[in-house]
Image 1: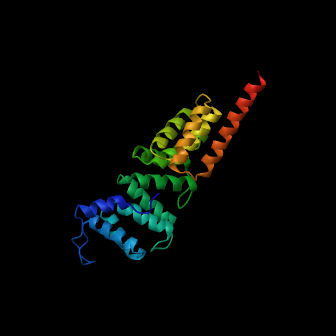
Image 2: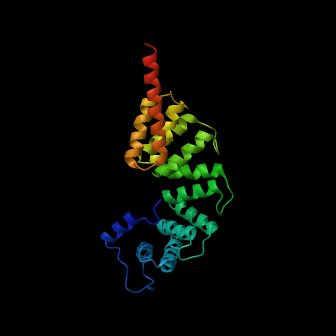
Image 3: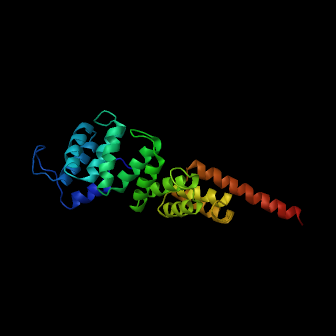
Length: 232
């Protein structure tokens, strides 16, 4: 998860959402405050970034709420405070920010700053997944696979992993490969599992778990070939 939403800010700057010279200009919009917060963060001035994000968040800018929550979760420019971060992620999520929903869902899973609650985590992860956050789809798929906070549903887990894998999530592609190897909710299919591992490694060649699963698939193929030879 990126620390700040750089692409959005770049677009704002291109469209002319420029920061005024005075840091105290009361006429600044929430978007302008957020852009200046981003610029301050990029300079390493975390305290100024947090102050600007606070102003923008208070004016209803969900991206600013998300970035401020990240500051609190990392202790950048403010004292580290997961409870405050959770409250800010909630505001971001309620404002339509899918990444905020994802972060809140993960805090609920971990019990960081909030009471651990897998059912509530699933609710927010679902919102994030619907909003296009592939990591949220992966995390939610894991909950359906394990039956944590939701009724165990292997078919739903497969669907979520598949969606996340299509969205470029290496963990989802790897998890889905394991599902096909073990035949959970789908027919056992080592060929498809191998294809999924190839996709995972194309996304991240150094992802160790995908490398390990790939080796298991190769060993399985060798055993099959050996059995075929001995059966002749």
